[in-house]
Length: 337
Image (cartoon, rainbow, N blue to C red; front, side):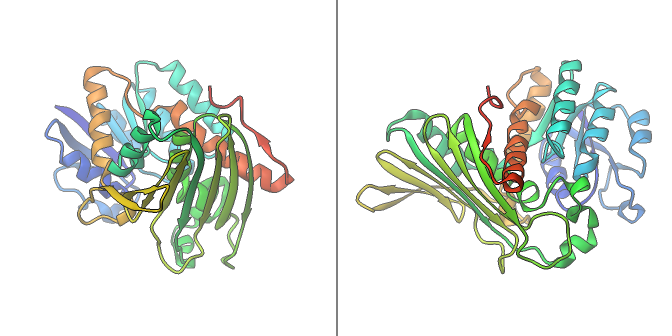
């Protein structure tokens, strides 16, 4: 049986813990958080307030890192250098410089796996959409649209101030809420040629990071992508991902994949599973993704989301922000080989 631990007991950690406990081949032996009031949050697991002591005292196969963004690299590095596999929440890194540090860390420790949590890749709707695009039955991709219209109150940032600080979060709505949508767009579109983007603040929260962003993405295939994300809506609306192929359009909305034929007739194809008791936008992909990662540990296989896979979304975010700053298109052709 593989032995696991979780560092950081915030909101998303409960999804990781549930996924671990749903797998009979994994034992959750320890958890860590600086908040001592969470000591009884997970029964049967030893509680630590110092992750370095946990790494010293426990024999672990894998550590789940569910920490604020600015702690991802340092804590992942500490685990990897002890030979412990890591399953890390998104985003991979704060910025492109830290991406390079992650790439070097992975290259220097090839016997250790660093898996990044992009669970939306494993939603049934997206898996089916990828399959349809790859088969080419309806022709080549002409356009891809990704929309995230969510709501975050000012309290969201005051309760956890790191979320509104650029050096601690790496950004706002793009890196924290909409990064999964960017990841899905690049998986569907392939290699990116260039991005032109704009970031702004529609809300008067007094934070450093953007609450709204838009971008036009040009793929080397000739397809065009449109991305829009905001935290300034009144509620968390359904995320939308649309792909226009030469002979049909496919749209994921309300966790359902729809096919829209050339004559406008709509056909329902598949609906996502839901994880009971979790936020709707988490989906049930965590369970599949985490199970797959542990299978890779057991079999020493490579079918998981690697550092290089997760790096693309950070390069996209950097390009959007830089383009907004200099008001020019940013070339990304060299970034995805």
